[in-house]
Image (tube, rainbow, N blue to C red):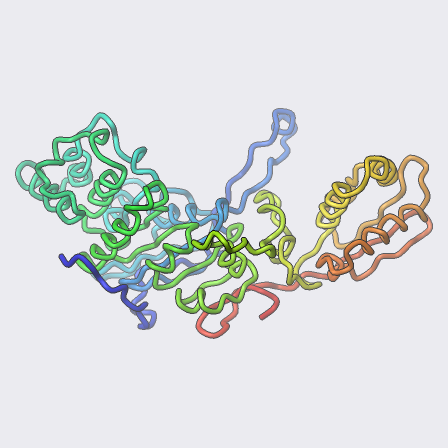
Length: 437
């Protein structure tokens, strides 16, 4: 096997070359409510970890899933292997040995276990992925034993071959060792050897280098590229590290709160990012020059609650380019009022909080709300408060979504624009989910 391999261009063939077809996939998890809620039969909510994701994985390509923690990329990878139950959609695998596509989501028990030989996973933490009480030879050969593929001398020979393919050579020096005898990079090589020993067609690599020292990350990625050529593998590469995705992937999908917001060839995504979230991720890549400041236009706030994702585009509360139709709602206004209170004096905060109460009326997904003054306050005082907040920052994107703010007899009415239907649309060679396109 050669020591260096040029990263190949993404395949350009049509539907016939699709090895894995994920069609409108949904993976939802029910949350358990508090004790009283369960007694009263109230639902604890639903987390849409993967929400209507469609991708077509081509044979021989490296497809990257990129996003912050909680974006759903790992859940999507595990769903492809049948490790988590899906709520809706299909996952079709077109095996290299021909025949009709197999719906992975419909497989159970022995059928799923048998089919999983063709779909393997490399987990993030090699220290946790290996059993400290088993030798490397036993662990790498275990998949062959489980599936009855080899035993005795043949098993030993296959383990030796797999270890040598991942760079643990001579294999005899490693077969009798335990995980504690290996470095982090060697452990990950052993994990990769265990994943490839069944000669799979698709390998899901979940942050395979994030737990390793910087000095060995490039070597592990190069090893995976070498194995891709040698074994004709197709990769799903899960990462939050855009730098490794740029080096390793043919195509990249950017995920945010369970949805793909942009997908396309890696070169195009990095050269011309369209979605504001993709642009923000690229700006957040650290610069090796310590004299350069971190950009100040990074997304504000944190990732929203996955159990109550924002209306419309999930990124709109953090997006500096958000428009009226992006999905603004009353709880966005509540967040803005809370932020306003962090900038005022204690006296002003106490006065305004007494005037509006706890803002529970804003914990709704309705497009129109009416706020009434509390504790004997007047409508004029309430109106003045919101006008002052608006004057503080008239360029705040939320105000673009407010279609009506009116003072009525008993309160202040605030109405928001109806959100647009947002889906992936072709832009150049990529697909983008944004009202800007």
